[in-house]
Image (cartoon, rainbow, N blue to C red; front, side):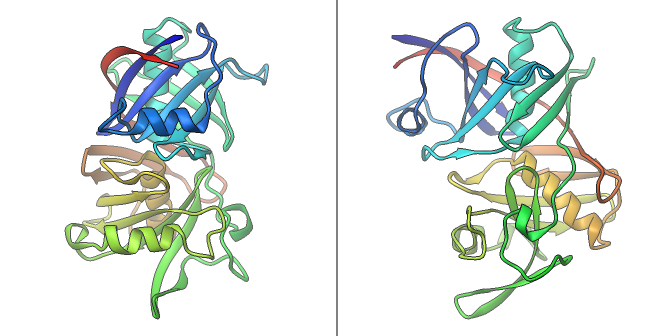
Length: 276
């Protein structure tokens, strides 16, 4: 069986997108792992599945698999690509789209300039909701790694994030500390790890070690989590911009209980077919 797919990216965070509305197939974790291999498969950070909704109040269901086959709750760059995809494929004519994910309902807005804004919902800061093991909620936490104490903020954007402030993002220990924190026992569902360099009240740089994918060119939920942590701790003000290796995202957050708004591009790279 041949399946049509589209290769897309959001600031270099790349995806294989499958339309399972007009095509019918049962996708398994092993398929994501097989197709995600950059040497023997299509190659991607995440596989995005566009499915019919199970909730009558939304337009689509959105599922996400990492290239290691693990299914995750949310992907911000993928959400923007999702919006571009369903419009390009004429699966909807709406420019404001409601989508259900395992991390909650998100709202996508395709703007006239081609940029896509995503209402990512309100961040979750209570440790049990992240999930993160801590006695009580705090702006930051001390976590022991290899006998050393690391200070981080813990935020859920539908998926778990740890945010560390660094002096120089280019020299940050992304590939050494990132995987150790990803698998740290205090994060029972693993965690995405962001390394944030604050430049001024409205600008910052960020690198992210993504759970199940390693460092990526950009992480939308990671940028949202970093913005929340920076505003919460008084380092930055909304609105703000975060520069990732793949490009820039604009973010707004009015404070606890309010949604994070993320705006950025989504690009189609090519169309293809893959054998199931």
